[in-house]
Image 1 (cartoon, rainbow, N blue to C red):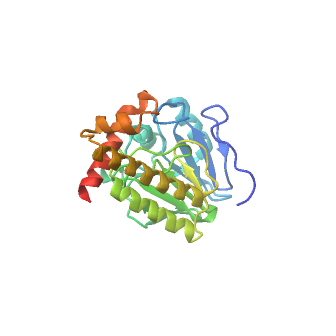
Image 2: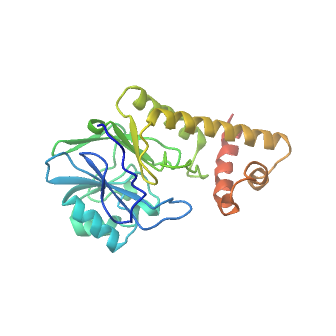
Image 3: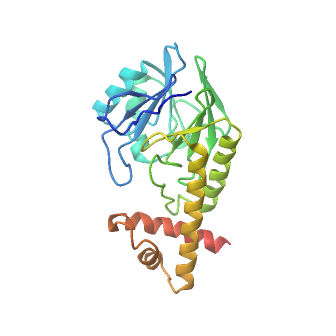
Amino acid sequence: MSGAVPDVTAGPTDVPVRVSDRAVVVRADNAGIMTLDGTNTWVLRAPGAARSIVVDPGPDDPTHLDAVLAEAGEVALVLYTHWHGDHTDAIDTMVARTGAPARARDAAWCRDAEPLADGEVVEVDGLRVEAVHTPGHTQDSICLLVEDDAALLTGDTILGRGTTIIAHPDGALGPYLESLDRIGDVVSSGRASRFYPAHGPVLPDAHGVVDFYRAHRLERLEQVRAAVAAGAVTAQDVVEKVYADVDRSLWPAAERSVEAQLEYLRSE
């Protein structure tokens, strides 16, 4: 796929934006500190096909779901990248409105279907989507590879702007770093060159983003290590030293991230 990438965060919410021949995004009206511009719901469909796959329907908001379903047409399958409510709140409404099975890595979020297996390929009318297990942001996080688009839907594992949170105890830094390596392998192999995130704009330089994410995580880890060496005992102590330049409204989230980093350091 070539050409300029549309800014999916620039226009109004609940308006479909075509990103490629196979991918349309509908951004929910749930912007916030943790959701950035809102949850990106992805509608995937092979060119000319009648049926679609919907990824992360997001909040249980009738206006948003009406817009998603008007774009999606006949929904064959609904996929969830992880369990957080800004992705899964509409799960039962989607089942009721479409009759389509819901599938996720964790069986607790599946409806009328089996959990997604790592490496499993689902196909709908010529559209192929491969599940890639990428724990770290949450234990059940997955990415979804649309190789014909050279694109990886990254959920919250990689965001369109800034970096994601690794919130202890469900989030874990060790698995997250391994997941970045796995995503890097997908990119290096040429199977994906861009990221379709669940929050924020499309990222056209997948290789550069993976490098940035890894460098950021390792830099933060060294800052935490230094804070502990300087006498910091609790996660709050570390946040006050390492995140002093970060908006205080983000400190509670930063504290959970530091807990994950401290757990990682203890495991070393």
